[in-house]
Image (tube, rainbow, N blue to C red; front, side, top):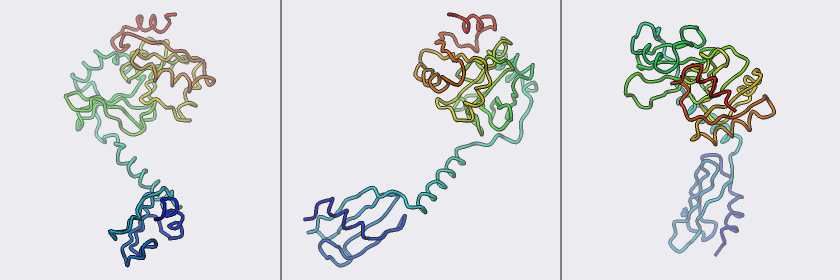
Amino acid sequence: MYSTKDQIELLKSIKLSDGESKSIDCPFCNGKKKFSISNKEGVVLWNCYKASCKARGAYQKGYGLKGARNRINNLRQISRKRTRTIPEILSSPSNHPAVMKYLDENGCLHAYSNSLIKIRYAPADNRCLFLSEDSSGAVGRTMGESIPKWMSYGDTNLLTVGTSNYAVIVEDAPSACAVAATEMYTGVAILGTNLSTKQKHSLKQYQNIIICLDNDAKKKAINLLRQLRGLVPCTVRFITKDLKYCQPSEIIHIVEER
């Protein structure tokens, strides 16, 4: 009986396009039209349906040019499906008492009132949206009981609030707003752990960056520090208080604590 290695060597001579399947005479037992072979997603699978023949198996062939292109296109389509567009109908938070109450209770009112960040209300989703500086993306916090509590729209990997040359990296948009209320720091909310080249370039504009995350996010903080080290002076503070519930003076004390 042929070993798996021997079977693979023999089957390599059979030409299969990406996604193609064939039913042929078995090259091992000569069973008439008993042998099935296919190339699906870069993996060649084969099997002989003759009871006395043990030819079967699989091996990683890899994608051909056409298959690789199809895979990339499929991934792009999946990515586009997962990315929600910002709702067309948005309203000012000042028209909605519940939204203004949320902003007040979560350290966002100063940043909103002083136009340090664009904040809008999406009636269709019942969410308070924190928009990026160029309005290409947003993160939306539900004003009800919807799940998930936070929802992303467009490009939301980096959200900056404030105009200072000194930045504080925090976990969420309200905390970034609270940091900006100190008028000493720009709050930067990073919603992922890995920074793109574009994001790193954007962060290089600051004279100093302090990463302020809680103890549960130590791995994330260290990962960010490693990515930024060598690009901009950067340190880490592990905090025990949620900055969005702190007064500006308290945030300054936490950030400056040695």
